[in-house]
Image 1 (cartoon, rainbow, N blue to C red):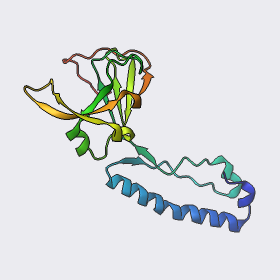
Image 2 (cartoon, one colour):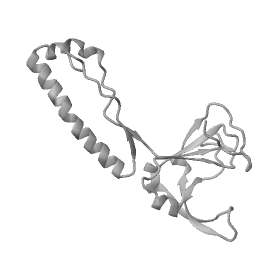
Image 3 (tube, helix red, strand yellow):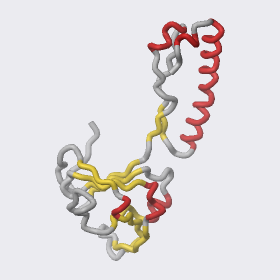
Image 4 (cartoon, rainbow, N blue to C red):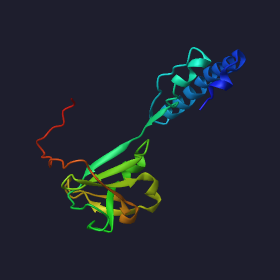
Length: 175
């Protein structure tokens, strides 16, 4: 945090505001590069104190906020933690889906049948995933290569309140 005493002189204040102004182009450059990679970013409102005496009333809100891709899947499995998870691994997604994704999902949230807990699969664990050929139950006579994550790489969380079990006739309507 900048100390007001360091900015008390006119020269120091002018130098600080010049440096701050020149940093904007650097931030925009990184934001442009990230959006070119498929990420969504938000730049918080920029405000500069009118003078050094007001600098402590202005808080740095950061340069960029990165919006990460997350995937949420409801599983027909009963589990609450690693100890009661019914399999040695969990199906993440089809190999084709993950390999084509740009940007890759940062995290998968695998919600249990009751909607009360989730197994979290971080893409950073992908080097530990295995590939299995699985039957796609939504299609007739169709198999695909699918990524599976071993249970030891999962994190389990309790969700805030049980969710209703969705039916095929329910629609999600934006509010």
